[in-house]
Image 1 (cartoon, rainbow, N blue to C red):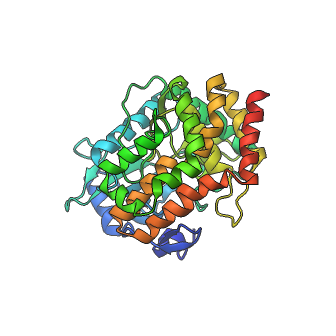
Image 2: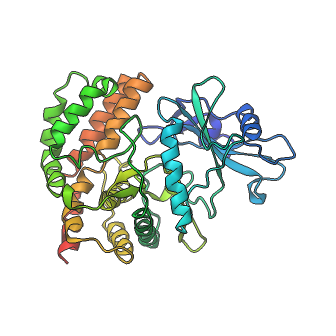
Image 3: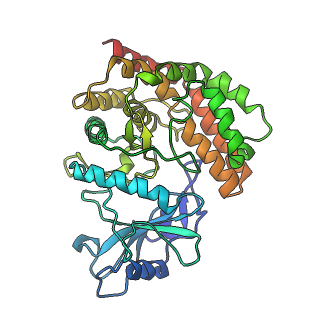
Length: 387
């Protein structure tokens, strides 16, 4: 990565697919020295920030010794988040999930312990929390790609589907409760509720930041008009769907890759939570197989088929899961969109971006599924079920 690109220029991926100024101060060499001391990293030279991630919701990057470099293991991945977004208790759930996956033979984030034995450490000012990960094996092939960019090859989609199925089989043995809703989080609190719209109204009532982001518009009626039919379908089937901890943000830039195009390691469990495997598969379809960054988004139906084939080769879907998959795909974004609305309205105090998250993401993605390309995607899922 060049020194004037992406995160190394203080720029991050914006809501419109462009590069914009970061909301959070980027990692600094002072951060690198603080982390090296607090984690007792065995480096013989002064560490520096080697690369900054262009992902917008935290400050993250590679920290290490430039003279040696990442190839010799003298680098780690450091992530700094505001305590209003993540706290040590929430991260402890995520880190336990990662350890469980690693114990099951899946390359997941290897979160290092600090001197005091903790995997999430609050800074001296009490504002931010830091994590330190060992470098994942494999090549970060999609590192500079926008999140939710599609697969470069059908074989990538098929193999990513198979790995996602392996992750779900491994997660099925983890006894761990879910994390609560919050800014930049995922759950199935709405799509899995007996009455999704009532659950949404109750969620907004107890979370003033979300309520502020939804504003004075007739949001409940609008959400019902756009998403109500699909939410009724997810609700009707929720009790028949097995649950487990899931990734929550499965797309190719959250994986590392081998030279022959196989996924090697799973990255970024920041949206992981206890939901259902089929909803996680729906998220993978929605985020990996629709060109949301295009002016007129379209679904890559070949990638959808490949992803499903790979998944089914390891963990075949039940009849109830096949039945739920189309509606879950159309609503895969709901909880995360709501968490983004709260994040922009409450944490960043940006009503303009909260409005974009509501209008273009929560409502806009829902409306897309009623267009020709959206209906074609849902029809493809239905044909796969019936075939």
